[in-house]
Image (cartoon, rainbow, N blue to C red; front, side, top):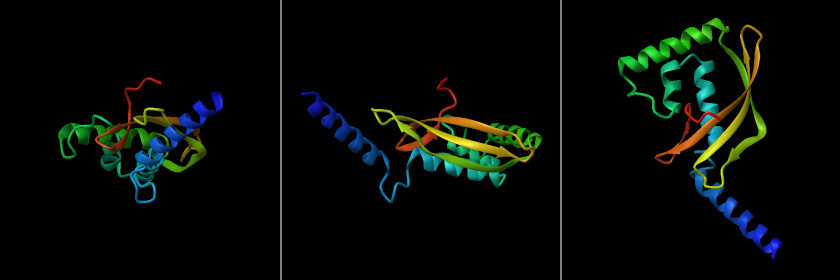
Length: 135
């Protein structure tokens, strides 16, 4: 009976993961969202990088520009984002398919290296970085 229950659970998880991938070769995945966010940071597109967060104000608002300015200042203090590696096997999607974590290693221009776990949640069918998760 345990084997049948395990098999059913595995099938459910696989179904949730395949449904949450958004089709088109896994275009809409937590890892893809984090990669795109980090690509924006690396290329200093700070305003665009904020669009990957849940609950960020409208793209052209003064509040958004202020946040982008603070992010730019913080990144410059660290010498910018030199490179990043998404940890292989570092994506974990919850059983409900609505939250996830992605692990990455970031290397800054000043030589500092940081291991980061990004918490994400699905918002209107898209994965967004969740700053309020507290995990």
